[in-house]
Length: 221
View 1: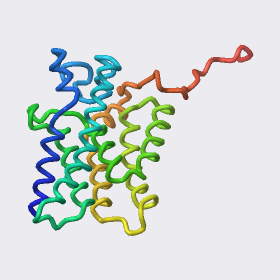
View 2: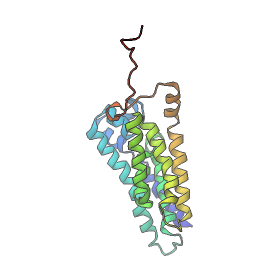
View 3: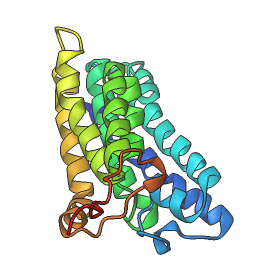
View 4: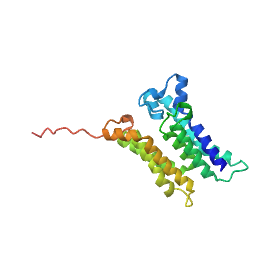
């Protein structure tokens, strides 16, 4: 079980390297002091620009992929390793998402974990990626709410894990799907509250379906 502890520790430490905060320091800005205050790709896009946001996304997705892929392969080479790849990938990957949300190096104030979760899914359960992206894109186009799109995309991992995965799905991957979905709902709880109050910002540039304003007919008295 030593490799389980090592997987969790390594994943968390890697996840604590926040893309927006690292790149922000190079540019002399703290993304947590701008816009929504969230250290994630969406806030980076809105406040700093698409080039900065692209770098943030690449780092955040990449560290999730490394945690779920490279770390387990390395740990399996240890002489005392007894666990399988999927278990180590689930533990290291989820720990990386936790590190992104509560980063050790940045006073435990990070992002919401979506980008890193995508990186984990790409490696640990690639069959979940297409439905995840489809749900995210459709929700963005239909509503313009990034937070809602992320929550629904996270929830889509759960059915996709079982319906599209192998018949003998490793239990660790099932647990990972549920854990990611629950965590994404938790980290986006403020978005849900703002949607209920009607104060949530929309990403209007990506929103294609808009509600037409009702105008009085000229024939009406």
